[in-house]
Image (cartoon, rainbow, N blue to C red; front, side, top):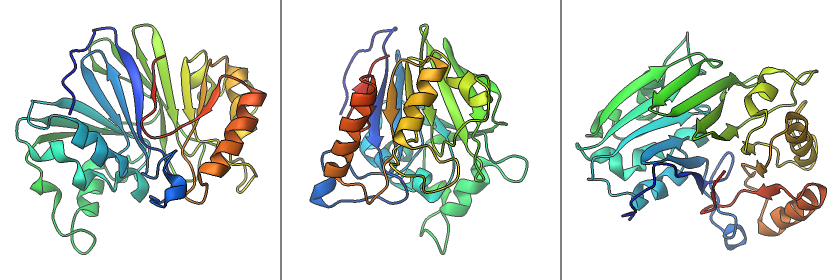
Length: 276
């Protein structure tokens, strides 16, 4: 449980879940981790969570749930892997806490509140969203908008180039930046597409580019991700998230190839903390 007093200039990302599709728990996945997507971003004393896969249970367990948490939760998408940990997020059960939920891919058809309500109801789940005692608010936007959720924090967004709509984020704080892109696809021609603009000059880019072969049209493979970031002048690429069939030994091999190609590239693992 965290008891740290934070600096106003502190800015980092911590990885709590790094898997695609479904969690894995066999011993050959222990070093990189088996939970689905969840990132913690700290901007000074302000807490942000990106995606609520199974990793968010462990993030919740690390927090003092009764301490009056006021946090923002951003979704890149609402495929089950991105939301299935929310019912087990312990701080949401304390009335002293409040959470704002943001999604940029659901309008105009539905919103993030109704989407989460559909997930947490019979016959899919035995208890409704109303079981949580924390104060929830819901904020839908159109990907491409720029948000200012907290003082000193700017969040730029972009629509992913994907058949399944999703949102990419660039979090800016204290003249530094962290970008988070899931379900990424090869950008269109030219250096100034919306995805290039989003990551241009970024300190850290967390990007879906783990694949070693082109499994789908325009799907980023690891060297595409490196080229994508180099072309945009981004400083560090973090390859994320990992398919459930990619075990530790396989990811070690990808890490060797990627770091040889570009030393500023790394493979995401649970517990890893990066300071831009």
